Length: 333
Image (cartoon, rainbow, N blue to C red; front, top):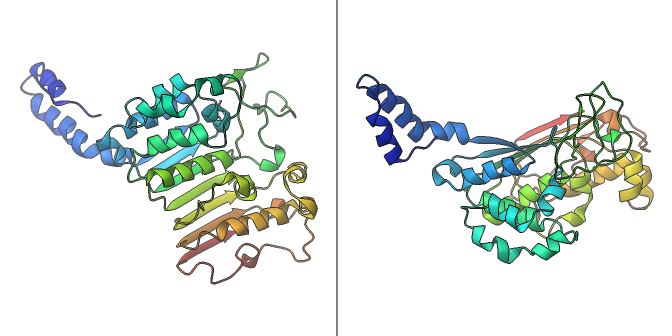
């Protein structure tokens, strides 16, 4: 992509006179102008090589400054983000951040003994450190799209083993390990991770804030409600406070999960609990210019005691004066 001057000179010595104009036109022009549109949108998955690729881009100012949109795709990943990020060894963290400004701080901010003895660090400790270091090299990053599993979330409590149609799906939870895909002996299908997007949203938003990125837009595809329900995972600062655009496709989990995570009577009406949680989350996003929500009514209204059918704006927005700058509102029912 970017070629140092000495490498350009070396190539020029081996080209014929007829090829020199074409090389200068294509290669030089692309190196100076083609990187910007190519690196404006970066898509990555949950794996160490993908994190390394993102970190490598952030260490090159002429590339990192081009990045404006990050797409974190969790579909068909062999790794679960929280177990991967929070279980990093010091040498792995040093390898990922080699060349960044945080590379020298890896050994001082992480404890090898703590990571090796199986103790779980506090939420976001290593993952937040990793992505804050990466995002510090992406000064113009302003949009985040977390694409969670594109299937009904009520089919699994949190993560569940997924198979192709050739193999019957398992009913047991399966938390991905660092080894990634596990091939099944009976077929070519592979076990995959079904993420609800809660950890990805949490880490990416907080890391962007701490790195000084002006995160203005958050999009979530097929997110579960847990990012909004479990308020204790958020540090004191409000993650949605500076967003100007919020576009979410939300799904609702099973009543079994609701009984485990919801307090009291709300656990018997999971959709009502999710609605209250979403309303509380939106309460801090007063600077929104665009709001788009897509909710499956057959899921969200299951087991509720509402006497009226359908979903109205008042169920989500506490007051019409909540978003004084709102110009675009889309509600899919």
